Image (cartoon, rainbow, N blue to C red; front, side):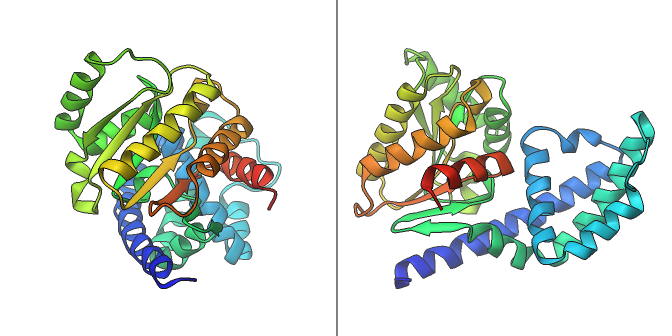
Length: 273
């Protein structure tokens, strides 16, 4: 591994692990209050990703916990099932926070190519100079990004959208605002409110080229359009096609965020390994 790639991996690992520790504490607090909504959407994908990663290295620990809280053939439903799920995941997260360095290293190491890292983590857990994600108004990804960026990001995005045509694949670049403590400098809000893979792919390619020309450095991208009905397979093909067209030797380090199992499996199938 070239020295610059090794340095990039170490920097990503340190930042991603720190973000995960903070987020585990937040999830633990929500679970302690009985908030089962933590299992939904992007948050749920992230927690299940931790569970999957822990299970690869400690299968007996995870299976033992499941048998204790969710025994095979259980008939729990409604509030009883919710309470048992909360108890199970509270215990799981306590183990994860103690092992987060190793878990994050495993999640970052699912695959790599020249200038491209494929990671089993959400976009917000992979700080780069720029973050590019599929922005669907009211969608989980956009809501999470704007919550992390704060009111100033919301205002800047609203202003940028007002000057745009709001077509799928078009994007607005804003400052990172609330994400700057993690080393993020810019956010590329790529409109993905319709299932239009060709337009999204063209927008992704243009977005990467704009980031390289204006800023350089590194970028994290998420699969685009899945919240609008694009299949994970099509979203993975769109990303790979755009990355291939962009080229591997242009000075921009690319990290592809694949937080859900469905996204990781789709990307493995598209890449053929």
